[in-house]
Length: 150
Image (cartoon, rainbow, N blue to C red; front, side, top):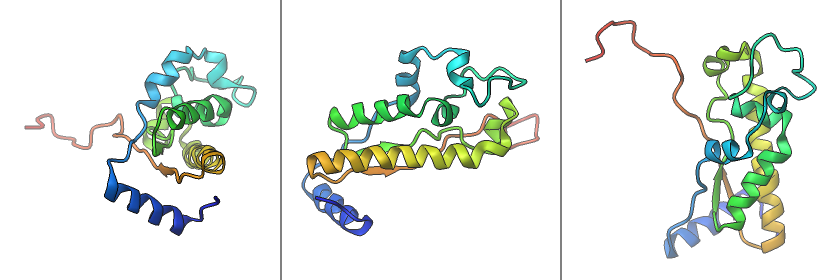
């Protein structure tokens, strides 16, 4: 069965009335299990980037989208009803550590696209609606200029 947005939401709401829906697990942990190298983070597009990129997990949306898709699929296959996008640090503030502020929106879009693409494929295979939730984490910068945060 193919779901459009409103029928998917209605089906998930109905299912949530019957049971607890399952959300995926930690994306960062799953990425770490892959042991990506600096070259994996760089890909061809960022081969000559002026800063180290290892650890920029959200960048893998652009350089290793198949790895991110595989992680999403694994969570669905394990029983997740919802997955979170690989966009925890897809903000200009967080991407500044890698001099990639201008890529934050592209990274976020690709993270959402990959998640929805996998969810749609699993829906088509199983006939069960699957949701994709956008993930955003705290920035790596403090919001206070005060030396005392009490």
